[in-house]
Each structure stands twice: as structure tokens, then as C-alpha cells.
Amino acid sequence: MIYEITSLKDEKIQFAKSLNSSKKSNKNKKFLIEGEEALNWAIKSDIVIDYIFINKKEKNLINKYAGFDVYILSEGLLKKITETNYLINIVAIGNVKENISYKNFTVVLDNLVDYGNIGTIIRTCNAFGINDIIATKKENDFYKRKTVDSSRGKVYSTNFLTFDDAEETINWLKQNNYQIITTSPYGNNIQSMVKLNDKPVALILGNETVGVNEKFIFNSDLTVQIPMYGSVESLNVGVAAGISIYELKLKQILGIRSEERRVGKECTIQC
Image (cartoon, rainbow, N blue to C red; front, side, top):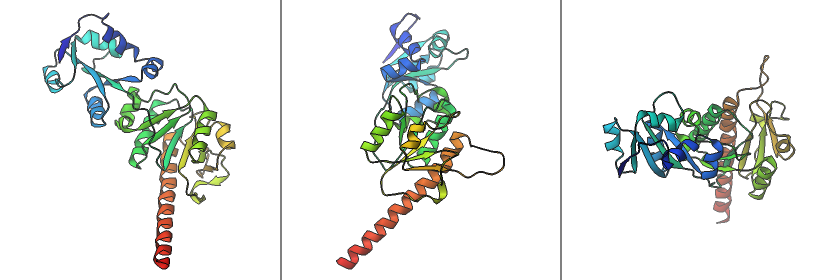
């Protein structure tokens, strides 16, 4: 259905504006989707869309999304919703998918604050078949425009689970039988040399400035470092995440295949 809104005081306009606040977005488990490309990413990822605001001058867009509840607005009202000085012709309200799939590899973001870094990590995870991401603080807003853009929309197909702090996160990981692997420039294991056990992996990535919370280091099965040379002490967390995920995921896959071959060989002998 297509409707028109002409007043800034309309409750749907006011609610949409409120979602610019991470606190309001997290509380309501809804978020703004800004722009046609982002909306198409969200729809493709099966995000539930409540309704869509479209510039009333954009007849083609109105017709294209007529299967949704569409509200046509002036350019001024659209700018009010997004709180920008520039015009975004289409904005939607999406619903958060908060769950976890309990697969064999998850990434934990420990107090990361840069939305570009978070988006980069999400995109890297997706490339390696990792769809579960955990955060150590409830304030994380994974659907910020910068995160959506840097993840190329992969944020919409990712499962998220958030906790209040590091301690609560650690307890959950242990209860669910994860081996905790923490990254640190001062880790006592060279990442490429470590041996994983057969439990699911939880890779901990620390804050851009202060690194990983010490509670993770104290409770880790392994604390690993990426060896570096010259005057560089640490890598950007997005870059480090890519290296760590690649190496650890490869070790995990090779370990699983080796175990499958061993079991198969034993079965052949015994059978």
C-alpha cells in the first residue's frame, strides 16, 4: 500500500528519527536502512521490513517497492529522518536478527568502536563462511551506515549476540564448549604455529586502542600473536582479523579433515 505523510510530527517519522540513536535502535531491535542499494541487500538477506519512506518525486522507486507499505514524503522530511544535509531518496525500517547458529567458528568483538572496522571484519567473516559474531557490550549498533557500507551489506546476513561485558561473554563461551583464542601483539604463541583442539573456535578481537580485555587473556586456551618486523607493533584490527581468521580457519578445516580420514581408516580396518 502507498500512503503520504506531510507532517514532521507524524509518529512514524518521529520513530524513524529516533533510530539514529544506537540506544533507541538496540532497545527497539529495529534500524534504519538508508539508500536503495542497502535496502536491496537487506531484502536479499531476508531482513523483515516494516515500511519504506520514499521521495514522492521518485515515481520509479515508488512503483518498484509498491509491494511493501510505502510512505511518500517530501525531500525535507527524508532529511529529517536521516539527520543529514544531503538527500537519501529511500529509507526503510528493518528488524534486527539476533541469534546465534552455534557453528564451529565465531568471532568476538571486544569493545570495538570503529564502525568501518566492524564492517570490514563482518565482510571478512562472511568470505570464510563465518556467520556468527558476538559483542561484549550491548551498545554495539551493527547497522550503522558506515558498517553496512564497509561490509557491503553482509551485516544483514550475519547472526549477532551481545553481552553486557567480557565476563558474561566468557561464561557463555565456556558453557557452549568454545576454545577461546585471543589475539594480542604480546601473545605467547605464534599464530601460524599453534595447534587447535577439536572444539569450536571463538576468536577474540580487541579494541582498536587498548586491545583485548585482560579477562579474555586470563581465560584463553591460547593467546596468539602475528609476528611483525620493523617498527610496526600492531596491525589495524580489520587487517589482523583477516590474517587470523584465514590461518585459524584453515587449521580448523585441515584438522577436521584429518580426523575424518582417521575415523574412516579405523572404520575400514574394523569393518
